[in-house]
Image (tube, rainbow, N blue to C red):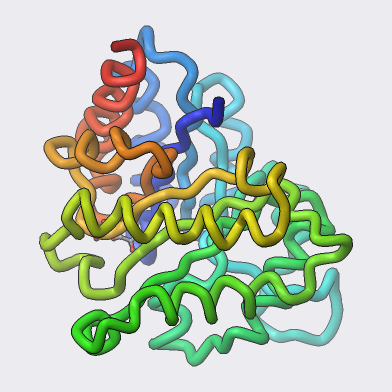
Amino acid sequence: MRQPLIVANWKMSKGLEEAKDYVRRFPGEVTGVSGIEMVVCAPFIALAVLSKMVQQTPLVLGAQNMYWEREGAFTGEISPLMLREVGVRYVIVGHSERRNLFGESDSLIAKKVASALEYGLAPILCVGEDLRQREAGQTKEVLQRQFFAALERLENEQPGRLVVAYEPVWAIGTGKAASAEDAASAAGFVRSLLKEIGSAAAQKTRVLYGGSVNADNIGDFTSCEDIDGALVGGSSLKEKEFAAIVRSVYEERRG
Ligand code: 13P
């Protein structure tokens, strides 16, 4: 059984004080919930402070990006070792906003995935088609290309603690989530790609859905066999809303 994983991606929202308030208030919203991993991917400036605060909470800390080298002359970048030092366990890699707004290529993403794994972080690799690709019927082709390109540098074909998030670009921040059928089909396809790496990888790697997830629609996704949780943007910004998503998954899994 894969443990459900619900990840908040705050993106470029929340300064330090707001982030601290959230982490202070969140545990009270999920009392009694167990067996679900809850991750908050906060802006870099909040990570060191939050890492101490989350120790007393069910939250685990994630980052939204990283560079692949351990240190050196890379002005403005943050290394995997720096993230480890402040207690970060997960890192989002290849988010469509980074691909599209910051020009991150498949080969650069591959370096980040390999580096995250090497330094003991769990990369949350985002893959997903844009609207034009979807309308052209290219969804699987895009997923396959992004998936294998990102894992190209994996040594011994070991995906380690890799997580894959299917995030169709057209569903991000639009209020138009994918249908459960489309999300299930894409997640199933991602799992079939994982099988090509190995049966252990396919069995243990968690596949998330992301794109306009909220407390009302989360169950549509997590009730699908191949979807193990969600990567949540807008609806993760208020602790009550994010907690409602977590509680919904908890109730569903409890049966
Ligand atoms: P929204 O939940 O706001 O659509 O964002 C999804 C996302 O990009 C999470 O990484």
